[in-house]
Image (cartoon, rainbow, N blue to C red; front, side):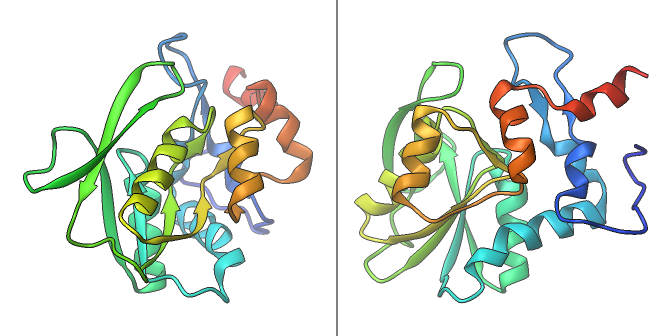
Amino acid sequence: MDVLAVPAHRHKGWYLSLMAPNTKGPAFAWLDPSRLYCNSQALADCVADLLSPFSSDTVDLVAGIDAMGFILGASAATSLGKGFLAIRKAGHLCVATQSQNYSDYTGREKTMETRLDVLKPGVRVLLVDQWIETGGTMKAAIELVEQLGATVVGVAAVAVENTKGGKWIKDNYRVSHCIPEELQSQVDRKHLESFKSFNS
């Protein structure tokens, strides 16, 4: 599918076929969801689908995780008319921060941090990232928000894989994602049938 094309009938999740397979090997994530963001309608529909489950919830702030979570998070914040908080990799914020160690999807040990002057008791936060694979990054973001006394209203990502960490997040928090039930097994196997269109 042409990355800028928009189908006449936009069923839920139509934009998922825009995601591209990894062509650079195991040092990278197994697919590239960001290709769908190049299509303005796809991005708008993706954000609308992610926010739909939280339509009756009070959200004070959207927090996005460095770096790809910034795209969906900022888009979600704009759609909701709320502010956006960047949860950053350590060393990038020039103000006082709270930090949290974690292991990412590659198993590498990292640290994320956020500023101290925004999150506090009573603030209700929607956490957004591009993809949840092992769940380590999102779990650390949850811990960071809660350490500062704020409340996690929910978690939103294009997909949540059914790994141990992904299941923990689904079991303990309200989760929104864009993957129809019939595609979840493909996500968990890390190979989408739509990848065939990239080989033709």
